[in-house]
Amino acid sequence: MNKSRTLGLTMLVISLVLAVLIILYYWTNSSFESMKYVPLYVMMMSFGYVLAQIIKRYVVRKQYWWDWLYYIGLIAIVVPTFFASTDNFTTLGWMTDVGTLFLIVPLILDGKKILSTK
Image 1 (tube, helix red, strand yellow):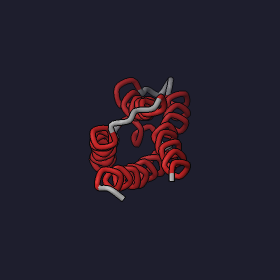
Image 2 (image 1 turned 90 degrees about the horizontal axis):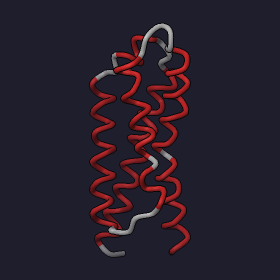
Image 3 (image 1 turned 45 degrees about the vertical axis):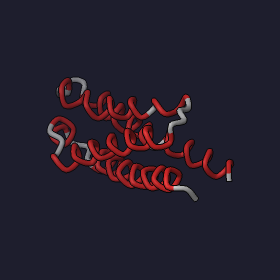
Image 4 (image 1 turned 135 degrees about the vertical axis):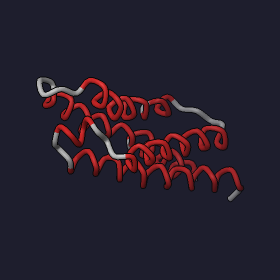
């Protein structure tokens, strides 16, 4: 296995771990405060996820249509911090629960592509 493939696979695993941890935070915390005031460690995990995606994009050099889907997950993380209120709390809670799943979708499709090309 060459270095770029190994690094790409490593970034895929790191992204998967970070995505699962971010999703677990949003699925286990359902209060208004946990959505409006997201802890620093969750934002750092999100930053690490984005860095892993950027590194993977430069290393793999092949882009697919699903590589952009994780932006939906990032938007689902950021929007409630700016627009959450007690009136729209339920809607934004649903949006974060579903939207954060888009952090995993491109990783699953990448993993499927890697396994099918072996």
